[in-house]
Amino acid sequence: MKIVGESMSSIPNHFSLEKFDNIIKEISSSKEELIIDDQINLAGYCEYSRFLQLIFSWSGYKFNNALVLPAEDEGSQAFREFASSLYGVSALNFCSYVVFKNGNKVSRRLAMEKSEHFVRKFYTKNISDIVCGDVAYIFNIDNAKKLKNNPIIYNELGKVRDKKEFSYIVRSILERICPDIKDGMVREKIGDISTFVYEAFLNTHDHARYDVSGHELQRSVRGVVFKYHDVLKENIVSESNKYPSLREYFSGWQLRPGEENLKFLEISVFDSGPGIVQTLLAKNKNITKQEAEEKSLSDQYPIIKKSFQVGQTSKVNPARGNGLPLIIGAIKSFGGAFMLRTGVFNLVNCFKIADDSDITEDDIRLEDYKEKGSLSRVPSACGTVISALIPLNKV
Image (tube, rainbow, N blue to C red; front, side, top):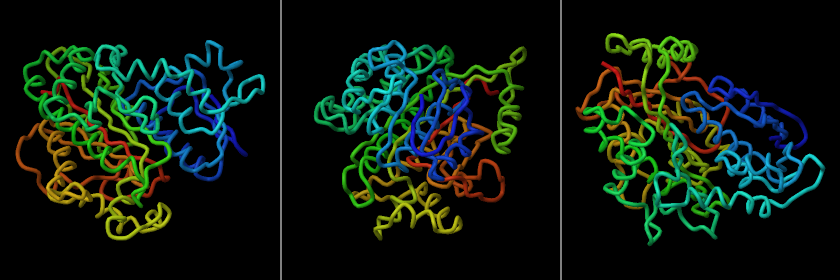
């Protein structure tokens, strides 16, 4: 896949978190052409959701953007395969038009029609239809008026399904992608996992469909990626070498005798909205994305941290202001890891032990993913990705 403009950046076929910030930096530096290999390896933790965020960021920086594909035309097998992937659908949704190998141009609308079969497959109440091996995807294309809302997560009235329904959805997905769901501790914690998914997705429903002025975004995508990981411990420790908190977390993971692999569930909730800082700043004063990001890190960080404190909200109804704290509490109960990528922040918090106690000040002390004990400004990314890594065989 090639997203074209005036200059060029490229993504190797093995995309990784380490490469994410460099690519975002190139995109935000007016490099409008982005070449992506046809086959992208997105097997690592949080890579799929971050890849989607890369597409959101590209679209957020461009206005008349063309998507250039190596496929011969819209009828080719290569294009059908591209249009039958979540990142392909997202790229088509955010482009202005598509250019094929033969030079022919196709409108975004016509190109999106080729992905309709794939999208309709995922707009279903049948859980098995959204599972692909050890991965499951739930997504909602807000501007797809023809499809309305995804019936897996929205009811007939267009409202997000309630917690009880989310619990059934989450349980059904985990039973299909995660062989360790039979473990008693995991089954007992289905409620906590469901709380994380429900509250994080509800947050996207409340905030990510609109700009900070309250106007509906012309195009937006939101969703959840569930992925089961079974990885050799030494490999994932090495993969996390540049991320001190995560490296320490995985290194300290005690396994049962005879086990060598870390088994965990990744759940990433993503959206293409304005981001946490800009949304909360706009609560009191209308502010642009640029104005928000020009604020110092010491000004922005307390805003993010405050959003995870009980009783803090930008919702109209203050009684619904405990969603983000509940997310932290659910991850803490598992002894899991929390990751947040929004605006100019890439933050983590790793809980070394499972703990059902109330949330403390330490629990919401989010750390920089590379600079433990300090903060670093990373290239600005559009949208927000909240990820939970939930251990399944941690002693």
